Amino acid sequence: MPANRTEQVLARLADLTPRKIVAELDRYIVGQGDAKKAVAIALRNRWRRQRAPEGIREEIAPNNIILIGPTGVGKTEIARRLAKLTGAPFIKVEASKFTEVGYVGRDVEGMVRDLAESAIDMVRHEREHDVEDLANDRVDERVLDLLLPPPTEPAPAAPADGASSVFVVSPTGGVTQEHDLARERHKRTRDKLKQLLLDGQLEQREVEIEVSASAVSGMDFAQQGAPEGMGNFAEMLEQFMPKRTKKRTVTVAEARRILLDEEYDKLINHDDVVADALDRVEKLGIIFLDEIDKIAGGKGEMGGPDVSREGVQRDLLPIVEGSNVQTKYGLVKTDHVLFIAAGAFHVSKPSDLIPELQGRFPIRVELKSLTEADFVRIMTEPENALTKQYAALVAAEGTELTFTDDGIAEVARTAAHVNARMENIGARRLHTVMTTLLEDVLYDLPERGTEAVKVDARVVRERLKAISEDEDLRKYIL
Image 1: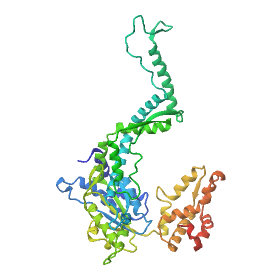
Image 2: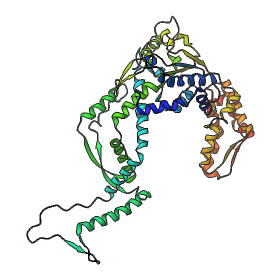
Image 3: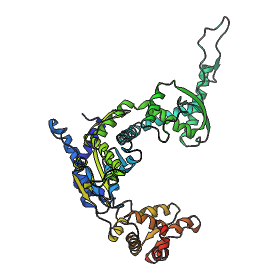
Image 4: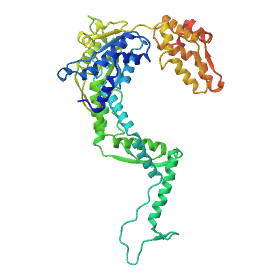
């Protein structure tokens, strides 16, 4: 049975029909309707599988997808937004990195371990959010103890002959022991300090705290070229070493951060986090394999880099097919992890992949190259459009930045023109064009005052004319 939180995530998928998923993706990504439709169906099938009869549920394999298209058309963004939409563990891996060392490349199982780490971080963050208020209250009390240590209680020793406790008589005739008065004074002072602490007036006050000192901190197992998993060995070794502490003098702000981590460790059951995370990986995990075209070799070619590429494909095959991968948290089954591969396939073709791997990616979608009209939509329609991002940056300086329709059209025309004349990098060209266009504005902003900045077609042409027309200045574009 899925863990409670994984069940909640799956329950959220019940409301995400394929049409709703595509509508959510449309908020951030322009066009590419075929790709959005394919990933929406694959995502909905995960919820459908959980509702299938138990006898056939394990037999339903995920619909792994290959997205084929040039760079900058939205392949990675579709996968990333899909994972964020569902709260699924997600990692992006460049397939070409597995060819870096030797003939058979690096340990491809590492991507599953990275996915498990991503899930652990995700679940722990959710648990921390649940206990955030309680943890902050405890931290405040501990900080107050550091600022004003509690008074020492008198030793409960029997008084000697003739000795007597000290009593204080109040004006009203009440009799109180001296240490009771000390506790009352301490409480009044503590209440005043607590108010100052909550008001943020003590953040720079220095306090002395005890922090754990790692017994293996001097050993670096994660050096370049070290075998895979040596970092995990260091963590396991640290668990068996005696715990040591050392005193540090830090500000209250820094002490709050350190103590908050300690309180989270006390309030959150790590075993529950691990169980929930691994369950979520197996049922909801998404691995995005980018640049898969870089490991596709030509048919009939022997030797050279193609040996390495085919070796990587054969190493990937059992992971994609479904296998048990050992992580430091336990075994992870990849049978129902969704794999989304992507590549430009300018030189090679999907059919250049080994047949076994091709069969594990039954859904293939071709993404279209972006046009000038698409660039106009990209700059205006998405919630994270570039024009909105730069307007927010300029607004931080107290200035208003506006783009006219003809100004946006001219930026789109310039980006499309440069893409056609140089390397076509899709929507990423808009970033380089906008950076060049607004470079002087962003540089002069602090001193130029709060006069509004208006970008129209004339401004765009003036600032980009030399760069867009002179081949020798193409380095300033990218």
